[in-house]
Image 1 (cartoon, rainbow, N blue to C red):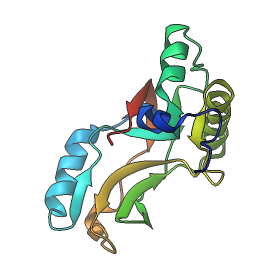
Image 2: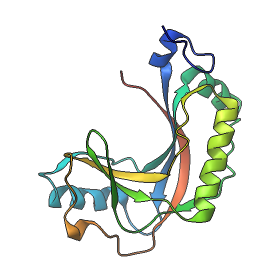
Image 3: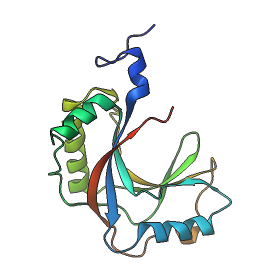
Length: 171
């Protein structure tokens, strides 16, 4: 059997999860916008992300997160907002994922710095060296896309960072 990385024990996989920044759009209500997207695309959407966030790291051990939360060790000095593109793009894996890419150089640099700080403080199973920050909109049936009317947000696309959170693996 292969040894788990970074000091993890076999059962530690059950206690790992994701660290996310919860976001709030500056100029509109995410949930209202997403309800409209779901109605327009109801035949193709498998699941929508009503909790607006950017995932920073996966495979983080729960005990490390609890320890650092208690010590207020997670820095939140990455800036008060991130800027995302205002049109939907996609990537495909077991389903098609509709997302807003984050390509603003300052936002990307801040998110990478925050990821590096997390990795320095926590055991991590998944590093994703090609990490490309994004805000997931919805999971679609494989190969499907949102209707053209759903692909653009007609206003500035700045998101305030509301909080940091940890979501444990549901397996």
